[in-house]
Image (tube, rainbow, N blue to C red; front, side, top):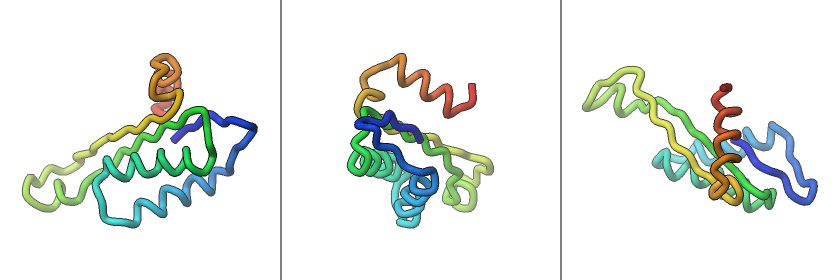
Length: 99
């Protein structure tokens, strides 16, 4: 996840990790989880922009039905400047991916 601080308001990494934990404990769709984390960043930090990328392996695909091992899904959510500024979004995604 990434956010563009505004008004000098930043937070510690442990709070970001706890935010993910709060939402990830609930059974839900990965798309909803990704959006909820992004919305929480916006609500509590009032950033200029926020980005959340969730990459997860799904037990339902691995153990039931399709039985596809090592199947990962990636979902994204962008808010604020990161939603409409393509160059900024590309830069943040590159940093997240380690490119």
